[in-house]
Length: 140
Image (tube, rainbow, N blue to C red):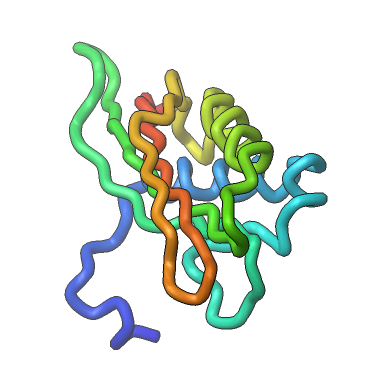
């Protein structure tokens, strides 16, 4: 496992907190549960589509005069099969990600907004809908 992550820097506390909260909220959503085979931390080695993979996160400095903060950008991918995207699943993921605000492992997510989406067809009749959510967090 260490070789797999060689050369990568460890995630900050804010990145970890945002990822954990996103995974928990997406996995707990009953509407999504009926449309997906699962919500995963990273791309699972063996799973059939449709599924959601919560990918990497990057962050930069964002705070106030008296509180430390981070702006975290989290990548989330909905992978599916067939001729068209499941718009209802994508819309639900967008809604859940936009509602990430709140307490998260020693941080407070002050705002959350999907700032970029991308859709592409893949070989073999599949497709992938990538989303980037921007979360602005303050340290508790």
